Length: 175
Image (cartoon, rainbow, N blue to C red; front, top):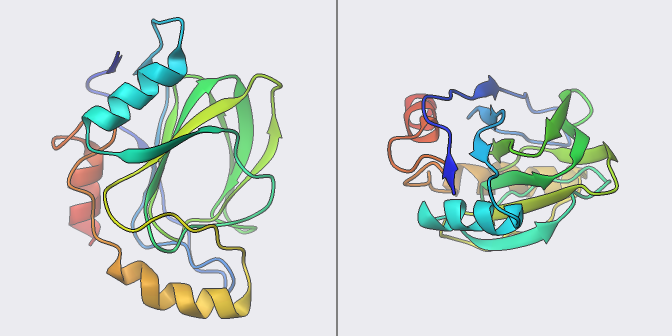
């Protein structure tokens, strides 16, 4: 179980659209970053994320409705299959993700599964801190999120590459 070394993520910055707050920190998309050499890719991803201090994990798909998390950052590791996911809300970007990919969403980043293969499975995880809350776009939620998101602490490690990972470098530079 490991992440491929020397891989740099593609970064995306989504602007606040009035309903989905997003975050000035970049969303990081790692392509084919997780080596899936075992018969249980879900366990491979869980060990990788857990080894880098990201816990409170779950296995499932991605909700098919637009939502965000205003109290915590999130990583999504694709264990099986593929999907097209809208990130950043209606004015963001639809991105294809597949087994071995990982996407790190800073707090407030909108996401919604548009289509997925029947075998699509994601492992999600969060850095230490507050619990995850699912928030749907609405004016009152947006107003509350604008107060909450700046208070979410930066993680101490990238969930794939630890303290030396791109998240640490890129998010600290943009903080």
